[in-house]
Length: 135
Length: 220
Image (cartoon, rainbow over the protein chains, first blue to last red):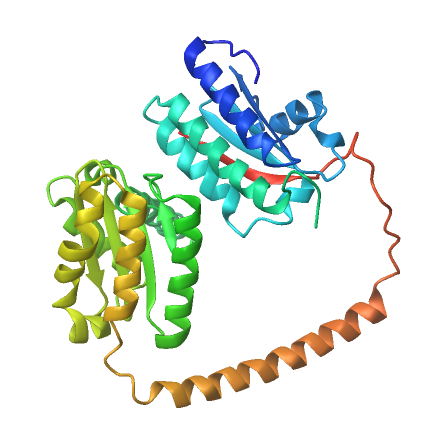
């Protein structure tokens, strides 16, 4: 969880989100990271990929890391998922995540939106990449 | 000069059509669920999708669910959800044999809009589903379950009116389609075998990969 530039999340909300991510990650071998910054530039998806790499999320063995990226000035949300988890989710799943989150971000509900995203993504990761080894 | 005028008219016409369409009715991103209000949880969404898909395969009735914040956001202003629902039914091509459930969460309004052939057999059932199945869940704030249970009730209650000659037609249609598909697959396989040079696939390490990963971008 990266410190955000514009303090759109209060300290309390940040801690709650971090706790939620920890709880989600305890159920899966995948990882979830949230990155909030001001500007996304021309191509938000490519920017999200660059951020994904800057956190070294692209080197996981199962390719099952997910980045939730928010650009506050450009009002863009990107959910970026590595190939492993991307290959397992049903069609339209990431769009569903993105729609659920942006519906909340629209109303300024950053905390609620990101909480929902962590929950949905965490459940999906736990389903396909459960913690504690494969049977 | 005349040509120029005509083409300018055409461009303007297309522009206004597009403007009108996007203004009035939300874009149909997905066949079964367009959850713009973000109220349907992941599990319910998957269940609804399966349910509606099965229902469509069985009866030929295409159903879709739309959730929005306020109907006024789609310039459906005074006429509200009624106008929006009937416009969406037409624009999403559900007006012949389709069902559309629209929920405007912030307006606290919902509507089940029926296509022509469904309307003949089930016009009296939608009120019952709304009052007895959906509203109790909505009152407790559980939109997700309310919509799921509503969809379940819809698939139980409605059937198309002109059902008798459909299966036979459908079977011929499917058989013809399957034959065509086989032929097309055979041809394309032969062509790809003949033309394509053999590709070497190499395993790519994580760092420095380009073009990997999936996801979605949204703006607000």
